[in-house]
Image 1: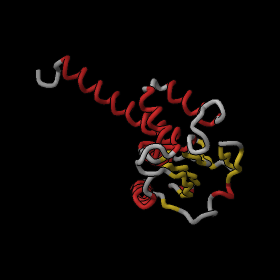
Image 2: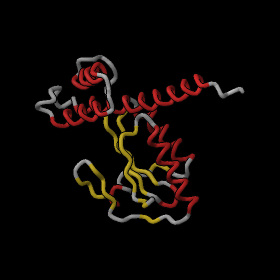
Image 3: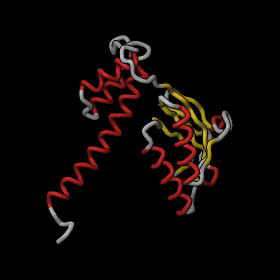
Image 4: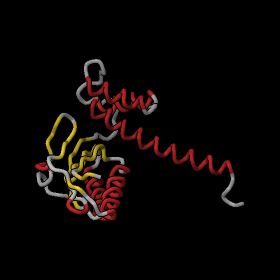
Length: 179
């Protein structure tokens, strides 16, 4: 009866849930830190207020929220985060815009290149993808959508998007593919 232990199953499920929650907390902390650069007061800084509300919807502890605000306002001595936008092409000519929050651009570029190359994509030159999108508010909207009918290509793009989303530095992914 190896592998059928009730407590082992519970432990494995809890570890998976804790890992998922940890990734969400890391992303929320980065978003709060960036928003707190303008002002550490959520009353006068609406983007910080929204970020805090979103973090609380994930049940993020107040200590983590306060620590992220301190890092953003410069009270903490830890590494400074920056927002960077990368442009990329995925399989079958799919256009991607990746909004990233990182403390080390070189590491992030290397990770993104690796993920893209595994899944049939590549980083693009600045401006070679953005012209395919309109910036509306905080969301990039594609001007033209790409319809993919081949199931293998569709699966390849979905795997790419999933791998990019799993990267801790990737904040938002915009693409022009209808899945």
